[in-house]
Image (spheres, rainbow, N blue to C red):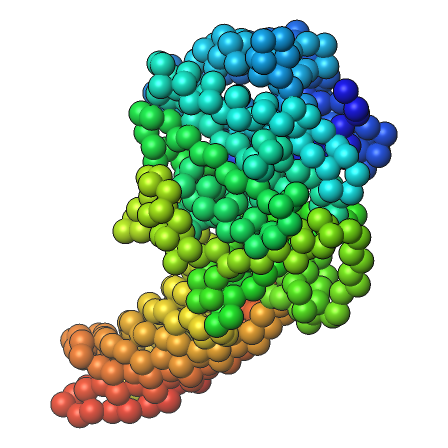
Length: 525
């Protein structure tokens, strides 16, 4: 068989992507010279994909799975194959390893049935390289037969096993030198990074990956380059997710835009990490592998983005790209791949026509963050200094807790709770305590260092503590205006603000209104 061109690159990208998504990964591959040089850090524990290495790896991971299940955990296992697909004697379909064959019977007896996993997910991209746009699957019937065998095996007694394939009308899948990967593998990775998370619950189910890849390849017109996705979720749980919420790490967060955005992400070495086409009016969040610099490309231009800028959703100015096109099939991929926006409208139409189990849009939106911590949530704890309420002497010192969510464009809205105390600041050595709850809204810039301006209004309670008595107003009103700078570093931001509060409270039977200039230093997460 001819040597594979990009299967080793696909293996590295699959391993890196799954580790970013919190998966324990073992990679078996033989890297070529270019991949070994460029991907040295990803290949430290890599072994050749022999039958012995496969058996030893399955044994190792089965022990880990057993330990997890003994602690009451549910174990999902992903088996991803990128390599030659063939049919041998008696038209029996098999996948190739470095020193042998893995047919349908061997796949179940040597891998699936030994893993001690609750669910097993099979993603197969059988391939070999052939020029700029090559064929994956040397025998035209291999994927069709393998798919039928898996479908029959699933019905025969493996309800916890799911499978996903891509094939053309000739039973082949394709790879493309522009992305140095298989088209299906690249689209599937982009889906699992968050591109397919149409209901923003942090999970990617079979139907979401199926619809995402279908949308990605639907615009490809060339018959030689078009693919179809074949999806078989586990019969016992058709809505079982392939991947869960990603751990903390770099995320590309594209807020809703009127026209959406078709976007590609590469690193500084030109490695294609992800592609997606954001639907108009919908959020797109991609969990990206760790890099110091990313290159973002759209049909209108490209931009260089630092890792720190991603935390602020700050997309710099795009400059016109340089594009080289070669051949009709590659031009069809270049123009058609990811040309169709993927969002809720496409997804719902697709799952209705395909009959696959759909995701739940009524659940909580997690946007790819760990459970209970939406990515768009901004919490700030601040220290405040201001003039004393009621025109008193001295300085009022306090704490503030703010919560903000993004709105359209640069708008942010939220709420603010604050407490401050000014000891011995008013008539007769009275101390003043001030509590306020405000609804807030304002404009917040993007970037590592950005400016902001915010307005708020709400409820105020003021307590006057005299040596001989205490009184207060629990139905006061207050309004607030602030402006300042925000500096983002990693997962946190430091905020400094100048502001003024206008309080209106009733004390000693009279309503009093006062301005309270002040400053605030806060730490935002």
